[in-house]
Image 1 (cartoon, one colour):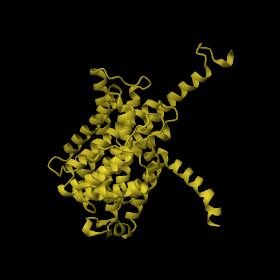
Image 2: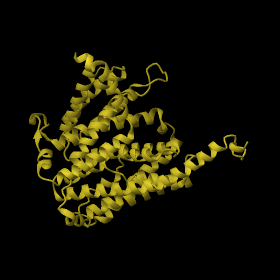
Image 3: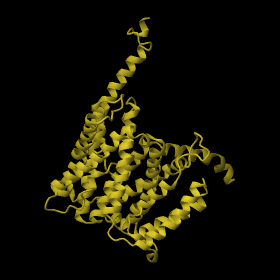
Image 4: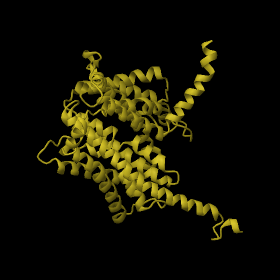
Length: 418
C-alpha cells in the first residue's frame, strides 16, 4: 500500500522539488524569508533566543554546541562544500582556467575585499577593529538570485563575471576565517583530520560514490577540524577540493564534482543556508529608537558603508584599472554600466558576513546586534541599488534583442515590410 501511494509518485515529485531548489532564484528567496522570519521571531518574545542558545552534543568530542552553533559550524559547512566544488570546477574546467579571461573578475574580487575593509577601519578608528573583514564578503546565493530575477536579457558574460568574482571572494573569505578568526589552534586534531581527509580523497579519486563510506569520513574530518580550533566550514572546502572534476576516461560527461554539486545543492539551498540565516539574522531591536541608535554606531555604519560604497568602488575601480593598464579585456558583450551594477551587487554580503561577524564579536551581545543590522541594511541597499541599475540595462538589452529579431537578416529593413 505504501509503495503504491508513494513509491512511484514520490520519487519523481522529489526529483522535481530538488531540481527547483537548484535554481538560484529560489535559494535566494528562501534565504530572504528565513532572515525575515528570524527578525520577527527575535522581537516577539524569548523563545527564539532560548532555542538558538540551547546546547546539545557530546562534550568529550568538543561538539557540545548551541543550536545556532550547529547551524554556523555544521550546516554552513555544506554550503562551503558546494561552493568549493563550484570553485574547483572553475579552476579546472571553467573560466578561472584561462588566466587572461579570469584576470578581471579575480582582480575585481581582490579590490572588492580590500576597499570595504579600509572603509570599515576608517569608520572604526579608535574602536574595535576586529570586524574589519565583515563587509569584505559577497553572498553567492543571494547575489546570483537577484541577478537571476532581473537578467532575462542581460548577457551571459555578466553572470560569469559575477560568479567568478563571488567564487574567488569566497575563497579569500575562507582563508581570512582560517588565518584571522581562529582563536586557538590544536595542531594534534588538525593532523588527525588529515587521515579521514586522505581516505576520502583516495576514494573520490577512484570515483567511489557510495555515501555510506564517504559521509562518515567527511563527518569525522569536519569534527576533527572543528576540534582543532579552525572554523569547521574550512573542512567543507578541503573535502570539496579533494573531489575530481574531470571524468576518469577523459570524456565530456558529468564529472564527480559536478555530480556531487548536483546532489548537494538542494540540501544547501533548502536547509543549510536558510537555517543558518534563521539563527544568524535574528536581531532584537528595542523599537524604532533601538534601530536608530544602532544606525549611529561605528560598527553598523562601517559595515553598511563597506558593503555599499566599499564594494562598489573596489570592484569597479579594480576592474577599470586592470582593463586600462594591462592586456586584460572586458567581455565584448558587456559595458561599463553592467560592471557598475555587478559591483553594487557584490555588496550583498549576507551569509559569510554574518558568519564573520559572529566569529569577530560573538553571539548575543550589543556588538553582535549592530553587526546584524549593518549586514542586513547594507545588503538590502546594495541589492536594491543593483536591481535599479541592472533592470535598466536589462531593458536596454531587451530592446536590442527585439530590434534584431525584427530585422533578422540584418539588412536594416524590418522583416515585416519585406
